[in-house]
Image 1 (cartoon, rainbow, N blue to C red):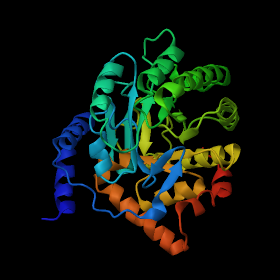
Image 2 (image 1 turned 90 degrees about the vertical axis):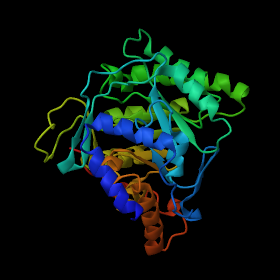
Image 3 (image 1 turned 45 degrees about the horizontal axis):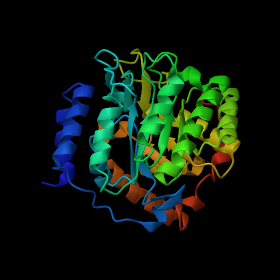
Image 4 (image 1 turned 30 degrees about the vertical axis):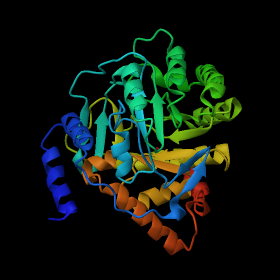
Length: 365
């Protein structure tokens, strides 16, 4: 039997389980080491140097898949150019009550309201310390505890805790599942947060021997005026990049008969258009030099290519794997090479942003 056939059988079995249980089974399978490595050959045209990091390809695993850093190296072996663990908070927290993740199969979408469930800084620290001898780009997505009286201090604590281990940091202020968290995207609060986080990073730079890049992850539901203020603060505070975007609260155009009204953030195919428009608008506002990771609704080489032409420097996915399986990463990378062939280009950088103007002129609503 071929691996794709076996994968289809495995996917069918996972879909007999609820979404969160199936995710746990997937993590255990990756920890077992039984899943095959990617056989996709490296295409140097897909590589890039961003910050002080060498990305073999632009495709990353988004935060949320490996919240507690249990399988970063197994994820990288699937063909991903990098992976992001977290969101992690200083103290362990259980998150919201179950059920809290729902498949919308007709829409190839997920609604989740996990609420930053994770085992905390100490547990992640132990796991990442144990893989110091491993290579590969592993970003750390930091968040704040739900009950924190000083959320800025929680983000700063994450920077201090992991600055010697993180390939880069993501400051997550865009999850819809922690009450009040998205308020940190407002200008005054964001200015305070970014000032504190960048200061903490700079304090650690001499101690760890490198200036760890700090990225800000934003919601796709911001207005144009809010996006303008966010980008202005990012540039003013010396933030190293943006991730566009997190999940959406919008339910526009869903076809699934069940779960559409569940509270939480929507990810997957329906997020593609909205997140790509916000990505292009952010690219136009920020200019050509700020690295932007495009995430939201990537489920094929074609959608990955669109993100790049809309202005993405790198890519991330997660939800599409729930419906298409772990072989999707390799399929996308092969497809990106074909897109370069068709366009007669020598690198993804040559394609980046060629359609920014067209996408930025669209209305996400």
